[in-house]
Length: 169
Image 1 (cartoon, helix red, strand yellow):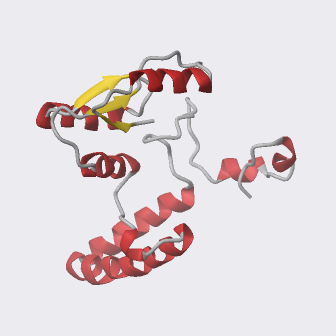
Image 2 (cartoon, one colour):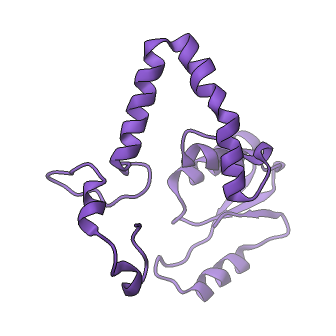
Image 3 (cartoon, helix red, strand yellow):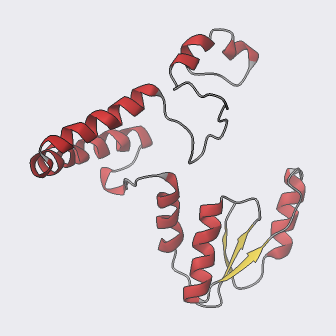
């Protein structure tokens, strides 16, 4: 059972089981759930098993073994996401997927993108790269980290210009 967000949902959670599902972390506890988050042990083992499987006979096991499973994986994900399998793109990680989206938006030199200093660093890097390479203008919207929703909307709204094409939030 996954942890819920309310006391009622958490009442039935076996936290010892959740704790045992992840590698022990000593002397520090990593609470970062982004790029440096340890996967559950079952995921870690699946990655190790796949690597060993491929290593035994890379030409056969990589191309006819693992890669042959991709269409079925995409079909399953499409069912989960309620879309067509052709609309599913598999990336190595969320940062790479975000970069695909950032670089896939058609923008011309001088067109503007609004970002905040609180955005994910990989996303900011992608927009900065487009600014350097293509002349897209990246405007940083400023607001306090603890700003209310209304203050954040007001900050973005006041920064929109006629050439603004993307609000990265």
